[in-house]
Length: 224
Image 1 (cartoon, rainbow, N blue to C red):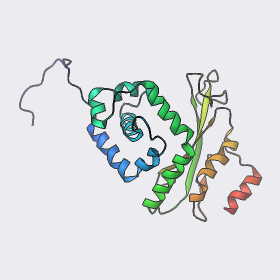
Image 2 (cartoon, helix red, strand yellow):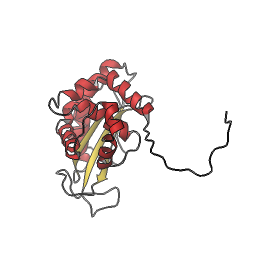
Image 3 (cartoon, helix red, strand yellow):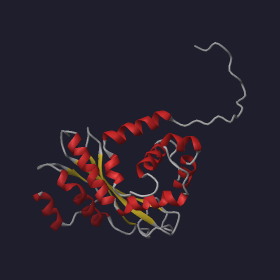
């Protein structure tokens, strides 16, 4: 109950705050899903990859701006203290992300192992869809000119395929990242093969309406 009038004018102070509830949630799920083992094997020297990733995930679930700004947030003394992180350069953060990208297939497979071992999903029907993300730089090797869903044909892009267990589960189980000039029909095969071994016999595969599947590949799909 309010017992006194609040100030009409907000004045800045030197107090620093960050969302501790989100951090507790990330810590809890990181343990539950055994992400320590999933990610830990990909970097054994230097800065602790799990501490850094817990901080990065916490940031992306709150402010969710650029990676550069995430470095600014994480390297604040109070945040580093929370995650037991030493001071580190922006280059270190990008190097960790490059390591994750280079091992993304193994990482996603390991996460699938954890999910399907821990949860008894009532079905394995899946939704699959594809999109593109515009790149505002030129250094990414996967960046290519292609059909832009963002109406930016002047920019390079990457294409992204996502697989999720269908309603009422709605849990993502797969993601494929490919060059920006790869069409959906070709990308479909990569996305489907990433998760097909997790499907039970008779599972329903739901794709976007505009996708046309190669008839020969469709035969292998129906056999599965």
